[in-house]
Amino acid sequence: MRASVSYSEPDPLSGGEAYETRIALNDSALINLVERGALQVEGAAGAFTLPATEAERLTVSRFLGYCASDRA
Image (cartoon, rainbow, N blue to C red; front, side, top):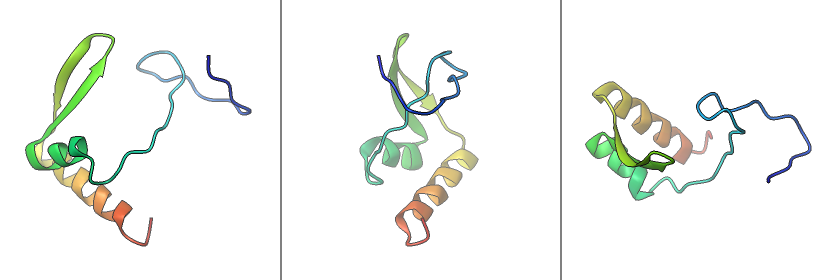
């Protein structure tokens, strides 16, 4: 069980705590999301692909560009 020194809101999808993790901006999952509009995920229900619309792909691309800049 994970513990923290501060309160954490329950994750609305799982009802549990939401944990953050770091991922490289050039990770193949993120590149695949931007270039092909597909994010591979694995969870309790198994492995599957989440599709992204063109607008979502553009938003992710812009966000990653911002993260790679000196502004982030």
